Length: 460
Image 1 (cartoon, one colour):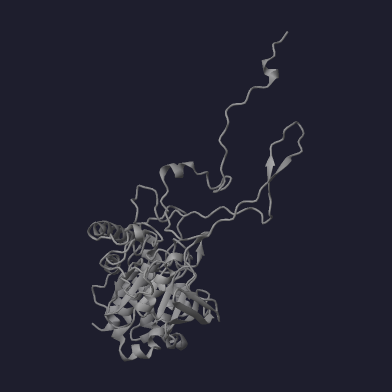
Image 2: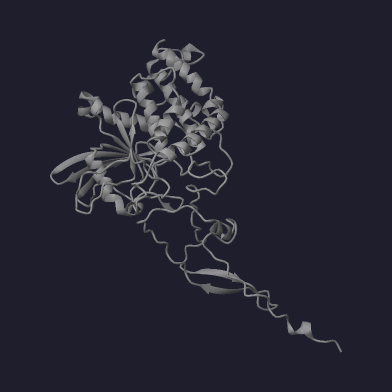
């Protein structure tokens, strides 16, 4: 069987996996992860001195796959950082990490420098859902920032697409200078999936192009330094990108086998990073993007007829093949995730109603652990004072207004791990989201008032 024939058969298998199939696989994945967590230990991350270095206290790296820091820049440096080594399909390694906190910025750059990272993939924004998701560890364009002994200068910043921001960073440590490229994907909603898969595939293409442009990697591709992939917690969006990068490497190096399985790839990924690929929608998105990757590869090599009409394939844009980019037809036809268009059912993820997300780091019958970070209620006005409508104190229908003090500014200090597990009492005491607001408090009633004197008068 030729590579094209094998790829075509695998494409049919991926496209035939409907939503019910992927949900069953994800259920199996969760069951395997529960057993795995009982066998794997995360004792180092759970130590008292390291808990402050974790953004989320229930996402800790496994001890046997965690990134160990040996580069010491001061006497207070320790070897712990919330990051995991992910073994790739070749001899390559990828680093999956949480976004840095203020207290771990220097450790973050220690890791980049020690492991000679040249490419950083950032899959989140700095703020999402009114919550800080990542501390800024780079410098603005043409400016310089210092993080401990590391000096970072942003040589250039560009937005080649609406989804991606590319920053070229010049990093200096002692007498050595290196260039690190950061690709920030800004179109990935928190606790959700991208609107279409073509943006993520374009991201993978650009990462691959950076590898090809490196003279050292061209001469010796086996010595590729690890890519650093992070989102906020380093598991959901990070896991999806690591899984798709695994598929991409199998595809471009012709390592696909007839027993190719997305379930097996994600299972192996979770053996190295807890809760990688965190929701059913994210798992289903891997199928959608994998289908797009397979079609792109068949389109690129055009050694087999992908379409029912052979002339349709011959008339495809030569420019799209030469630049290794997904044609616009495929962006709509095969990469739609939420838009309802005339597409094969297996490559479309319909938008679901707003329901509780199925995360794997909490029991299905209990309240969510990682997903219930609600945004703070925004004031209805930007004025420095707020006015509240008071109840009339007499028969006069003219309302009376009372001046209230301006709300206190929200602190942005992020020097601690984020506890997103609400207790039962806290959850039951919250006002409804469509009521007076999340952060406002209803005063406790002071008891019944005395009845008016007129009610107690005796008739004579």
